Length: 219
Image (tube, rainbow, N blue to C red; front, side):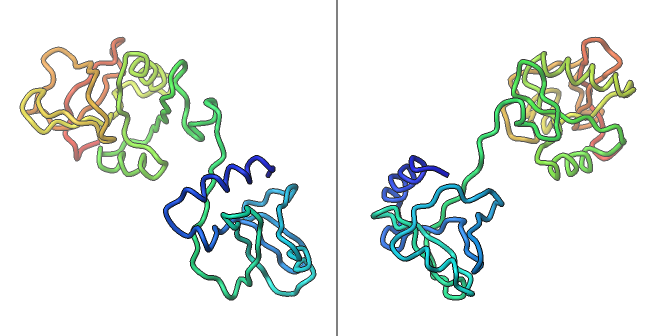
C-alpha cells in the first residue's frame, strides 16, 4: 500500500532462503480492464517496472511478482505461472478485536465463549476447535471468576465443562487441552478424585467456581 512497505518487503525478501532470482508473488492482478488486489482492497500504490502499465489494456489475465533485486513489480501470464516464493500478509488486529466472535475477559488477553447446549467433553472440545479454540484453560482467578459469572448469567447453574484432564491418581498428570501449563488450580475440597472421572467441570453454583471431576463421555 505504500513505498515503505515495498522497501521493507525488498529487504525481507532479499534475505530470504530461496527464490531471490525469481522474485516473489504478490496478490495483484489485472483482468484486462483494471488492476485489483486479491483481498479486495483498492490499488492506491504501484511500483511497476517499465512497460508493465501497457498490460492494463490486454485481454489476458496477468499476475504480478516483485523482483527482489530492484523491488519493481513485473508481470506474468496467469496461464504460464512458474514456481516462485510468495508473501502472505495478515492485518494487525488491536486488542479489542483479537477474540472475534469470542468475549474478551476484561484486563486480560483471554477469549472465552459460553455455550448453553449440553455436550460431552469430546463433543464440547470439537465445537471449540471448530471455532479456533479449546475447552477453557484457566490460568488465574480473574478468568475463573469471569467464566463462573458469565455462566450464571446464562442460567448455567449446574456447572460448565473446562479443558482439564487427569491421567494419574488424585492430581498427578493434569493437562489442559490446549497444551498450556497447569499453573493455577481451583479444586473443590477432596478433589481431584480420579474415581469420579478424568475430566473436569467448574461448579458455577459455588461462589468460588471450584472444579470437580466428571466422566469424560457424559453430559
